[in-house]
Amino acid sequence: MGPQVAAAACLLALAVAGCGTGERADDAAAVTERFHAALETDDGAAACGELTEETASKLEQQGKKPCEEAILELELPKGGRVAGTRVEITNAVTTLAEGNSDFLDEGPNGWKISAAGCVPTLPDQPYECELEG
Amino acid sequence: MRFFKHNGLSIVFLALFLAAIVGQAIAGHADFNEDQDRHGDPRISLARYLVSSEFGVAVMENWQSEYLQFTLFVVLTVWLLQRGSPESKELDKAGPESDQQQKIGSHAQQNSPRWATVGGIRTRLYENSLLLVMGTIWIGTWFAQSVTGVAEYNTERLDHQQDPLSWGSYITTPDFWERTLQNWQSEFLAVGSMAILAVYLRQRGSPESKPVGAPHTSTGVEG
Image (cartoon, rainbow over all chains, first blue to last red; front, side, top):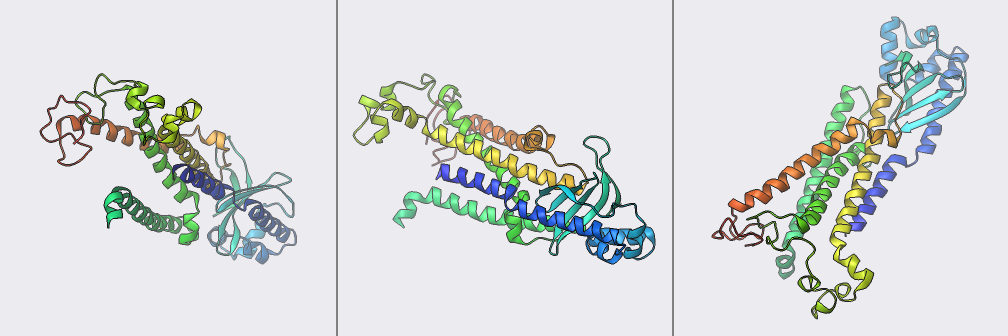
């Protein structure tokens, strides 16, 4: 029974780590591109639809106006193509070709953006984000 | 009934294992969802939790340390002795012992396992098979701990808007070594204390103990 248990454990570990990340990475990238495309056309409502509830509500509290208005006042990239995506279980980071990154959470309604317009600061330190929940 | 009488030890431990891992899954799932609530993140189903890295790393870090414990116990007790302990061999038997003592090759009995009698590579393999299998499971589960651990660690890093780490970087982090060593220390303590306590203490009827009336100085005697 020993070697089978070990093999099963390894398979489980690999499955947990890597299962289906390609497809989910594409989904996360699509959400990011939809978000920035909505900003490009000044469609605040569509952009807010791609945010997590927590991030949208924090933006409303800070901007003291509805999300769809407040989001258009932020300095976020308008349009853009995702050049790189990294998925880790229920979290992902997408990086636009021009360099800004967005962080996403996966929930029952698919991927939603929890932080956007993020740029790296010091090595191993959190990114600085224009919008975060 | 006869089957249970002859296999009770493995059956009961298998049942205890299953009950405990089901309990761990239920409690771990509830704890995970409480944490999700605190972070304003969505709750996940039990099925999703069971294939998550959170559950995987929690199981693997314990498995690897248990298999390391037995791997080390199997190999170190070949050479290391403990005077008075039933966990130790007798004081004049340190080392791999002779073929005659080990009933290998021409010294094998009629009912010895075939690989103990044939000689060559098969006997070399068979005489170390317990160590090889336990050691392989240890390395496999430790690797699985690192793979599930890096996924869990990176999820947390992304939650805090930090870049994820590679596997190679993760195995140098305090997170990996804290998970590993916190399990190892408890195993080493348990084995070490068992070896020494069994010199002076007894459990009537248990093969893990010396007979109740055996002197403290008698080594390698099981009751």
